[in-house]
Each structure stands twice: as C-alpha cells, then as structure tokens.
Length: 464
Image (cartoon, rainbow, N blue to C red):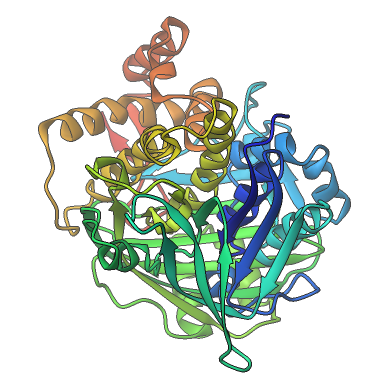
C-alpha cells in the first residue's frame, strides 16, 4: 500500500479510535493511539467507557467490517464462547418494534448473523488485534489539551498532551490527527481557539435512562438468544435480555421521555413482569445476580455537522461519537464508527489532498442513514418532543405495513433485520418479491383477526 505520511495520531482508544488506527497503519509509517485511561490487560470495564457496563448488541454490519479488517475475528469471538444467532430460526429471537412482535416461528435463509459479546470482551478482542500491528503504539494515561497548527492555522500539525500521573506536558507532531474521544470531544473548542467556527449541532432530545445487570441463568432455561421490547407509542419503556454465553445474560430495562427508570433489581423484575414473556420473567426472578445494577442516561441524539463547515483545517478528522452520538437502544454507534473506518480507507486510497473535507462529507452519508433511522424511530413516540417533517411521517407510515408483515412472514422479518443490522438499505423493501409479501400480509385474514403486541408487551388479538 502506498504510504501517505510518517506519523498519524488517534485520540482515544475507543472502538472508533481502534478501527481508525487499524486503517491508518496501512498508510502511515507510525500510528500512535493516545488514551486517557491506562488500558486494562483483561476484558474488563474501564472508566473511559462507562457504557461498557451496560447492555450491548453487535450489529451484523459491524461484525462484517471487523472480519474485513481482522480476518477470522468473528470466529475468534465464537471460540471465546460468545453467543450467536445464525440459523434463521425465529423461535430463538423475540423482538418487538413499535408494538409489532416479529414472527416467532419459521426460518429465513438470508438473516444476518447476530453475535453477542459484552462490550468489554469485544473491545478487548479488537484492542489485542490492534496491539499486534507493529507500527501502532499506545500512549496511555494522557489528557489531550489542545491541537497544534501551522502559523497560518490552515493545517493541524499535532496535539498537546498532559501525563495524568505527573502533569508533564508533551507535544506529539503528526501529519494527521483523528479525534475519537467520544461525545465529550473538545474538538469544537480547539477549532474555536484556532479561529474556526464550531460545527452546527443537530439534536433530538430523548431523555433515555436505563438500568442493567449481569445475571447467571442455568443452561436451557432461556430458549431465546435475545429478547427485546423497544418503546412503543403510549409506552416509552423498554426491556431486553441478551445471552452473552457461558450461562451469562445481561438484562436491561429503561425509559424514554423523562419517565423514571428502574432503580434496583426489584424494579427491573417489575419491568420483566410487565414486558417479558412469563417464563422469561420467572427465569430472571430466580437468576443469580453477578453484578450490581448500573445506570446510564443519554439526553439526546446529537450530530455535530463537520460536513457543513465552510472551513476545516487540513490534517484533522473526527469519528465516532465525537461526530454523532445516537440513542444507544438501536445499537448503531459502534457500527457507524466501523463504517467510518471503511470510508477513511477509501479516502486515503485516493490520496491526502483535501482529506478532511472529503472524509467529513463521505462519512456523513453513513451517519445520515443511521440518524434518520434512530430519530424517526424516536419520534414515533408522542412523548418525545421534536419536529416531525412530512417526509419522516410518510416514511414511518410506510414502515407500518412492513412491520405488520414481519409479524407473520419470516422472509419479510429477515429483510427487516438486515436493514436494522445496517447490511441493506431500506430501499430493499421495495423489491417486488418483498412488496408482494407485504401486500399479502395486509390482506391476509385469520378469522378476521391479526396478532399484535398489546400495550403491556404481550401478544393480543386485535380485530381487523
């Protein structure tokens, strides 16, 4: 691969930072990852990733990119004992979206593989792969306090860091700096200090709050790989249970729109009793807790529009949550960061000329797809405040017959999961074969009644 420079610096050993470093190693002689934490040597939680203690899902497109960047990565996770769903059997998947419960019987040959590592296990496995790359090094226990630039401030030349142990300062020179420091990124401040505008921020307030806990449940008690109840209009509550492998499960329960979330194990049990199937609620009640209940709040979806800035200094890229942080219940954050790594590789293959602007604009295309999906889903809830443009209301209305068909048709459900997994565009729902199935489902009669999920999360018969 043609080299593009001597040294690149990545700020943050997040998933986005690690994947960016992996790509940069193909184009730069040296890559340094600067991280605030001292990174653990085992797959355990760390302070810089507080969300790592909470429930996570690995979308199919994320797993696909990880296998592209690290051949055999998914098989490695499976060897570690990570749970998976890859046989298309809908009896092992119990999901509902917007009050529509996906079909529970039958199979689809074209479903994506769902892997379910915990966040610490996933991040550790990626970090180990990145550490094995000879021209990547880690600079740990450092705070980033500013950017350095050329006298005309048109190009970034590096970063200023401070050692957290002894407060000593250091400048790292680099031809490219990539900010992957997450939602709390200070790049808008650093740009302002250099005379640039801060990026505009698009925001939809969701007031998400949830609680999670690790449980031990004996083998065979839970038949499903994953159970998920996403919020529905009139019910801004959610519940999920994911099999992490080795009889370990993560349970999560929460709310949107400012509704009080569960405070402790007893209240998580209340959510399970209300939203989960009876046998699952009972399994959780008798399970062995193996962690404390942990809480997390996310105020909003927020997109910093670097792609809209009129001026950007060369030699600076921003990725991951530092650009856009989503409502995490849809599991998009790490996947978008992975797609940004793919875009970074494509951009670098075309050279370094105008890299900052090219990358920001190309990456925004993937962010836009995820943003529209997350925001449109959030705004189906009347409890969430926000502007609902006509285009969004039309797309949400068009999605209703798809979800109705997904209740009974495993092929439509499988295609819907491919879209949720960010493997396919929503436009694939317009294929004639899928449209025909959707139309058949709309006209199908079962004694004049159709199965929907009631407001309590359980199945109910609703007259047509």
